Amino acid sequence: MAGPVLAGWLDVCQHRCMSNMELLPLLEPTDQAVEPCCPPLTERPFTAGEAETAARMFKALGDPVRLRLFSAVASHEGGEACVCDISDVGVSQPTVSHHLKKLKEAGLLTSERRGTWVYYRVEPSVLAAMGKLLSTAPAAV
Amino acid sequence: MAGPVLAGWLDVCQHRCMSNMELLPLLEPTDQAVEPCCPPLTERPFTAGEAETAARMFKALGDPVRLRLFSAVASHEGGEACVCDISDVGVSQPTVSHHLKKLKEAGLLTSERRGTWVYYRVEPSVLAAMGKLLSTAPAAV
DNA sequence: TCGGTATTTCGACATCCGTCGATGGCTTGC
DNA sequence: GCAAGCCATCGACGGATGTCGAAATACCGA
Image (tube, rainbow over all chains, first blue to last red; front, side):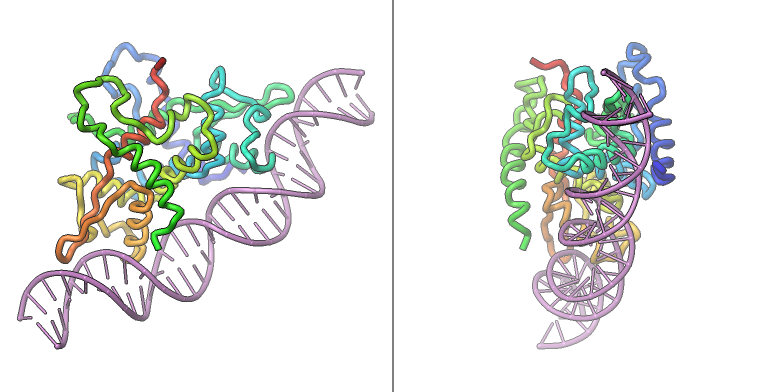
């Protein structure tokens, strides 16, 4: 029940973003290594589809609680954190779980159960893609 | 009726972000030139206040229509665009106006009336700040 | 097998948000 | 001054969203 809504974006973005770009950082010192889901915001007007895709990422970070949770995971030692390590954000525990699910559905986090605890870690390629989105196009091409 | 809610963020962020950083890009090749509103997401867990501030920015870009409008302005010639130039996003004119207002309240756009038309332009410093937010801390300090 | 802990899911609720049509304010040109 | 065009505001509506308590699920240790 993760939702067919997400399937589209996950398919499109992760598929296009995750594939082998950190595996060969030496070959291309250019920015081509990390292929973002959409062109930089300043390059040309977004199409409806691009906007739909990118907005889903921004929306996921558009809630203070989610942002705190995401930051907590991203800054945690080893790049991952147990839910119990980051649940102190002022809302109930079910709400924490709800927000973590949202972040996961947006492709920003992944989760893995190890024994009693569930660990969340950031999806670095998506972070890089969003960074590229916001970067003012460096006079490319 | 722009809202006292925004006043806080505008005060805090614009005040801290806009001041003289693009005026001296030559002095410091480091990243210190652009002072973001918050530390990078990966540096340490966000405080409640930081999350509130940053989430407002992400939220503003978390809607497909707003993202298209913002991209249209950002990519328009001269860095600014008349409302009439970017109104073709599939929603009614009042809705376009509504979203432009939201982007303006979030500090991402500024507007200026020149004769019959109203021109919107992007706030470059805020874009840079958001980019910094997403950048994985480059082994600083 | 059973109790305890960690996490998710469910159901419900109040609030926020995007959207529209109608209306109003402002500027230009006649 | 008056009609026309551009843009903002208003009021209303339906749907999405954040939040919680209660209950269900998953895992571990005894």
